Amino acid sequence: MDASKFAERLNDLIFEKGLQQNQLAEATGLTETSISQYARGITQPTIKSLVALADYFKCSTDFLLGDTDANSEKKFLQCPEFSVSLKRILGDHNCSGYKLCKEAEIPQASFYDWKNGNTYPSLDNLYKIANYFDCTIDYLLGRES
Image (tube, rainbow, N blue to C red; front, side, top):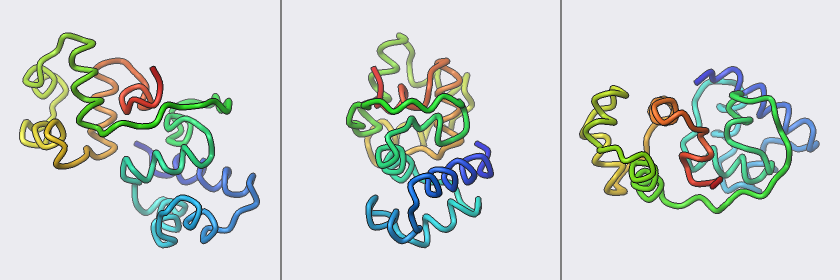
Protein backbone atom coordinates (compact mmCIF):
# COMPACT_ATOMS: atom_id res chain seq x y z
CA MET A 1 0.00 0.00 0.00
CA ASP A 2 1.23 3.46 -0.89
CA ALA A 3 0.47 5.69 2.11
CA SER A 4 1.16 8.83 0.08
CA LYS A 5 -1.49 7.88 -2.51
CA PHE A 6 -4.00 7.22 0.24
CA ALA A 7 -3.12 10.55 1.90
CA GLU A 8 -3.49 12.39 -1.40
CA ARG A 9 -6.89 10.82 -2.10
CA LEU A 10 -8.08 11.52 1.42
CA ASN A 11 -6.97 15.15 1.23
CA ASP A 12 -8.65 15.56 -2.17
CA LEU A 13 -11.93 14.19 -0.82
CA ILE A 14 -11.75 16.36 2.30
CA PHE A 15 -11.10 19.42 0.12
CA GLU A 16 -13.90 18.55 -2.34
CA LYS A 17 -16.40 18.29 0.53
CA GLY A 18 -15.13 21.52 2.11
CA LEU A 19 -14.47 19.74 5.40
CA GLN A 20 -12.11 20.31 8.27
CA GLN A 21 -10.38 17.24 9.71
CA ASN A 22 -12.27 17.59 12.98
CA GLN A 23 -15.60 17.53 11.08
CA LEU A 24 -14.58 14.36 9.26
CA ALA A 25 -13.47 12.78 12.53
CA GLU A 26 -16.81 13.57 14.14
CA ALA A 27 -18.80 12.31 11.14
CA THR A 28 -16.90 9.01 10.91
CA GLY A 29 -16.29 8.29 14.59
CA LEU A 30 -12.53 8.39 14.06
CA THR A 31 -10.19 10.53 16.09
CA GLU A 32 -8.91 13.81 14.74
CA THR A 33 -5.38 12.55 15.41
CA SER A 34 -5.99 9.50 13.20
CA ILE A 35 -7.41 11.64 10.39
CA SER A 36 -4.41 13.97 10.65
CA GLN A 37 -1.93 11.09 10.54
CA TYR A 38 -3.70 9.50 7.56
CA ALA A 39 -3.81 12.85 5.73
CA ARG A 40 -0.09 13.35 6.27
CA GLY A 41 0.78 9.80 5.19
CA ILE A 42 2.22 8.95 8.59
CA THR A 43 0.07 5.91 9.35
CA GLN A 44 -2.09 3.46 7.44
CA PRO A 45 -5.75 3.16 8.35
CA THR A 46 -7.15 0.06 9.97
CA ILE A 47 -9.77 -1.86 8.03
CA LYS A 48 -12.53 -0.31 10.13
CA SER A 49 -11.16 3.20 9.57
CA LEU A 50 -10.75 2.59 5.85
CA VAL A 51 -14.33 1.36 5.52
CA ALA A 52 -15.67 4.24 7.65
CA LEU A 53 -13.95 6.76 5.38
CA ALA A 54 -15.04 5.01 2.18
CA ASP A 55 -18.62 4.83 3.46
CA TYR A 56 -18.59 8.51 4.40
CA PHE A 57 -17.28 9.58 0.98
CA LYS A 58 -19.43 6.98 -0.84
CA CYS A 59 -16.43 5.65 -2.71
CA SER A 60 -14.70 2.32 -2.99
CA THR A 61 -11.87 1.41 -0.66
CA ASP A 62 -9.87 0.70 -3.81
CA PHE A 63 -10.34 4.30 -4.97
CA LEU A 64 -9.44 5.66 -1.54
CA LEU A 65 -6.28 3.52 -1.47
CA GLY A 66 -5.30 4.77 -4.94
CA ASP A 67 -5.69 1.38 -6.62
CA THR A 68 -8.23 2.65 -9.14
CA ASP A 69 -9.01 6.05 -10.59
CA ALA A 70 -12.70 5.27 -11.04
CA ASN A 71 -14.73 7.10 -8.43
CA SER A 72 -18.36 6.66 -9.25
CA GLU A 73 -20.66 6.98 -6.27
CA LYS A 74 -22.49 3.75 -5.68
CA LYS A 75 -24.13 1.91 -2.86
CA PHE A 76 -21.92 -0.61 -1.12
CA LEU A 77 -23.04 -3.49 1.05
CA GLN A 78 -22.59 -3.21 4.78
CA CYS A 79 -19.23 -4.70 5.59
CA PRO A 80 -19.52 -8.00 7.48
CA GLU A 81 -16.93 -9.05 10.05
CA PHE A 82 -13.68 -9.89 8.28
CA SER A 83 -13.83 -13.50 9.51
CA VAL A 84 -17.11 -13.93 7.57
CA SER A 85 -15.62 -12.40 4.41
CA LEU A 86 -12.50 -14.54 4.71
CA LYS A 87 -14.49 -17.76 5.01
CA ARG A 88 -16.67 -16.69 2.05
CA ILE A 89 -13.76 -15.99 -0.28
CA LEU A 90 -12.01 -19.23 0.69
CA GLY A 91 -15.20 -21.13 -0.09
CA ASP A 92 -15.79 -19.23 -3.35
CA HIS A 93 -12.33 -20.23 -4.54
CA ASN A 94 -12.30 -23.70 -2.98
CA CYS A 95 -9.09 -22.79 -1.20
CA SER A 96 -7.82 -23.96 2.16
CA GLY A 97 -6.39 -21.62 4.73
CA TYR A 98 -3.14 -23.58 4.62
CA LYS A 99 -2.82 -23.06 0.86
CA LEU A 100 -3.56 -19.34 1.14
CA CYS A 101 -0.98 -18.90 3.90
CA LYS A 102 1.67 -20.86 2.06
CA GLU A 103 1.19 -19.31 -1.38
CA ALA A 104 0.43 -15.73 -0.30
CA GLU A 105 3.14 -15.81 2.41
CA ILE A 106 0.80 -15.06 5.30
CA PRO A 107 1.67 -16.22 8.82
CA GLN A 108 -0.63 -19.07 9.85
CA ALA A 109 -1.12 -17.69 13.36
CA SER A 110 -2.34 -14.39 11.92
CA PHE A 111 -4.67 -16.20 9.53
CA TYR A 112 -6.29 -18.17 12.35
CA ASP A 113 -6.72 -15.01 14.42
CA TRP A 114 -8.52 -13.39 11.45
CA LYS A 115 -10.59 -16.49 10.76
CA ASN A 116 -11.67 -16.69 14.40
CA GLY A 117 -12.52 -12.99 14.51
CA ASN A 118 -9.85 -12.16 17.07
CA THR A 119 -7.96 -9.60 14.95
CA TYR A 120 -8.04 -7.91 11.56
CA PRO A 121 -5.32 -8.06 8.93
CA SER A 122 -3.10 -5.11 8.15
CA LEU A 123 -3.56 -3.41 4.79
CA ASP A 124 -0.42 -5.15 3.57
CA ASN A 125 -1.96 -8.54 4.33
CA LEU A 126 -5.27 -7.46 2.78
CA TYR A 127 -3.37 -6.70 -0.41
CA LYS A 128 -1.70 -10.12 -0.30
CA ILE A 129 -5.08 -11.84 -0.03
CA ALA A 130 -6.73 -9.65 -2.69
CA ASN A 131 -3.81 -10.21 -5.07
CA TYR A 132 -3.87 -13.94 -4.41
CA PHE A 133 -7.57 -14.15 -5.29
CA ASP A 134 -7.27 -11.46 -8.00
CA CYS A 135 -10.07 -9.38 -6.52
CA THR A 136 -10.67 -5.87 -5.25
CA ILE A 137 -10.31 -4.89 -1.61
CA ASP A 138 -14.04 -4.06 -1.59
CA TYR A 139 -14.90 -7.57 -2.79
CA LEU A 140 -12.57 -9.11 -0.23
CA LEU A 141 -14.18 -7.07 2.57
CA GLY A 142 -17.68 -8.00 1.41
CA ARG A 143 -18.65 -4.45 0.39
CA GLU A 144 -19.46 -5.59 -3.15
CA SER A 145 -20.89 -8.84 -4.40
